[in-house]
Image (cartoon, rainbow, N blue to C red; front, top):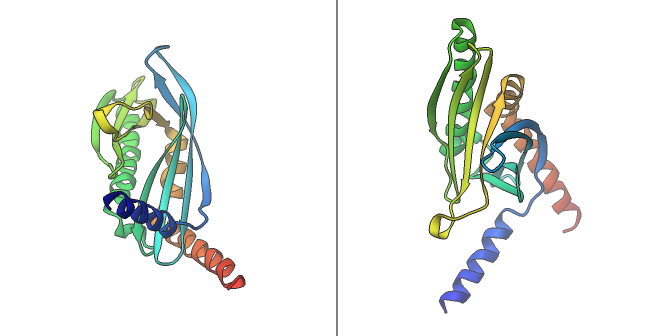
Length: 195
């Protein structure tokens, strides 16, 4: 009986978010590989979509063995209603502010900014400044919450200078609300055509 309940719950939770997500942009980042002891170029794809009732903001991280999605799901179309997403966004803004301070003061530092986890993903953002403040980055640590704490879906992504600025600009809650509204209209128009 319990298995049937979980199967039904899974079906409805998947159907609840069955709408198209619009591509917001690509962020060019770097991921540290512990085996090779070096940084490799990796992309972070950003998406957002809504059906008017619920919305998703999704980040797809390029991992060594595939891709992993960090998704912020919430009711409505106002990103500011999602505490987890706003934590993520505000931590990136803080890293952007600290980048300016580090450059102006030629400061090298590494500091934790905060947690941006969801129910399925551990997420932490920190700040790093090297080379007398000339190289600044937001560090996004991602790890799938898995049984027995073992997963291949984990990584630390370094988002530098102009890419951090681009990410903050595209994730601005006001601009994102407009994207979600347009997505809702597009998704609902397609539904109306075939009713």
